[in-house]
Image: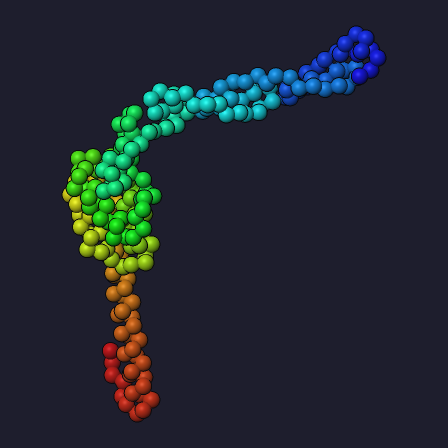
Amino acid sequence: MGFLCKAFGHKWERLSNKCSRRCRVCGTTETIEHQWQLIEGQCAEKCTVCGKRRSIECTFDGCKCVRCGNEKHSYVYVDGDATDLQLCTKCGKYYLSRDLRTRSTEEGILDMFETLISLHGDILPQIILTDHIYNVIAYDVIAAKRQQLSEKEERILNLLYERGVQTKAIDDIRARIEERKKSRSLSNDEIRRQEYDANADEGIFHGGVRGDK
């Protein structure tokens, strides 16, 4: 700090687009308070001067933030260990996770869905999502690891379809299976054609006569 500033104080000027100021006499700089403004639809604020952002806590009305819409539920399992269906004790919302607890086998997962359908048929449209169809029930078929549904998968999808649950996704799965069957059928026909050609050529090589196909 220079002598003049010690004697008479700094002569501050605000720096453009920054939350700081500089003495035009001695060059000393210091930060000043941000001018925070709430960002609409977010739990965040932005400084109108320098553009810095910061997060703020959500303000919940029940289970939903009044600003950003973020949800925070207090879930409990509805059926104990029988299914993975959960219910929020605050707002009554149902939830079925894709990450099914302690069900490491495909058979266990499908058994759970059958139980779920039998116990909660009236709320299935609320809880069964497209992800459950593609990524849980018929995952191996969608990933082309298998060419067709198992008997239990078919039964579960039929039960859901009868109740009007995720019918578009189920139709898509069945269409994919039919396409694969057609493709496999064409491939088999091509293999038989190649075998026929090879056998015919072998006959010609040994003096046989190749007939028209």
